[in-house]
Image 1 (tube, rainbow, N blue to C red):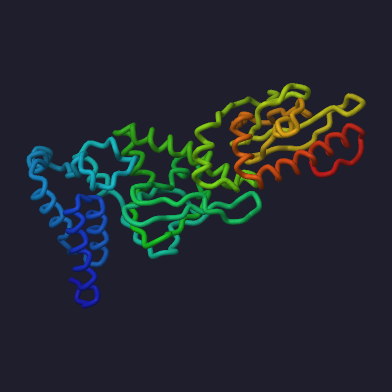
Image 2 (cartoon, rainbow, N blue to C red):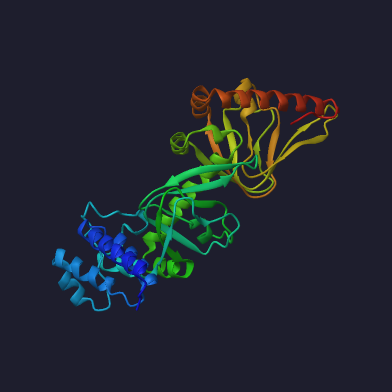
Length: 354
């Protein structure tokens, strides 16, 4: 038993918090609080109290729990006070609590670090209370807050889809309560509920693109809201290695941002010999020269590996540039530098910045 008076006060405070959350319909938060209490007092019966109060307030669930021995309770689906997370939105009522019970509870003060870049990525987190900042490194090496997540949001899915180490840091933007699901628990859950895997993958794809814009030297100037709007307007294309993505002399009405893979930009000098202008990698852009100068393509870009690209149409890029003059200035400067570099290579002169 816990005898320390401070611990007893803390335990009672958590008990009151948990019961209050049940009354508000936030069973997830109540269970998370009960799990936190078990860390202070392993003999705590708060989980039983939470269950009893929940069934008292929701008598229609009592028969279902009796009929499903071993199954757990979950909040009514139409309870608007329940802080839903899109990850578990399609779970049957009697299975959500089983998921929550399998999760670890994590509590952090404001500015506490959930994980940092290069940590092992073996779990995902669901925010039950508070908010968290996702912090990435830009192409210039500076830290950028890619997004701020709130109650009901989840993060850490990059580790589930093949990244062995974390590709960003996450810090508490306020006092933060989390539920942590290990990769093993998540795989078991997805095996029985494929919709969870679909939701996870959809968010993963969207966040990969959002982060790509956030860390780009050019598009980092976009606000979070504008990034989301841009992502709804762009398309994606895939090329296998050896394919020409754009060809010198063609009309240029699209710009590309490399999501994954590598390519080389090249042209022919005055003797007809191939001259490589630049090797391009994740996060690099190309094709904007023809759009900005309203000319034909000045170089050919060929995929060196299988490559996935984000495609910006002329109208989409025009809207961005009209709203962000600093991006327009960056494009103008880069366009002139690249044009100068191409002309110098054609004359077999040492190129300037390309």
